Length: 98
Image (cartoon, rainbow, N blue to C red; front, side, top):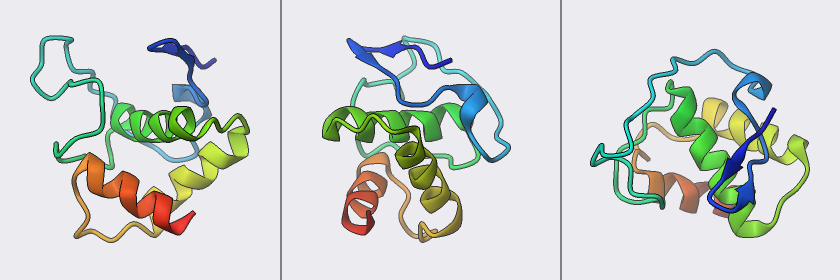
């Protein structure tokens, strides 16, 4: 079941993703954790990072349909060019291709 992220109810939770991922959590004091999409490189095989991207976009755009989140996951998995690697670049690409 999705949980709250910030003051926002996450669109998708860990058990709702369609693909297999590793699940390495970062500590709150990890410099990779900034609370907003940035130039940090994203590991597309890391479930928490994919969830973060999906739920960040859902919050930004007010999306509430799980199918939208699952479509984003599919785009990340199947269509996102390998040359696009930072969180910020991935979000820009997703927004342009939605």
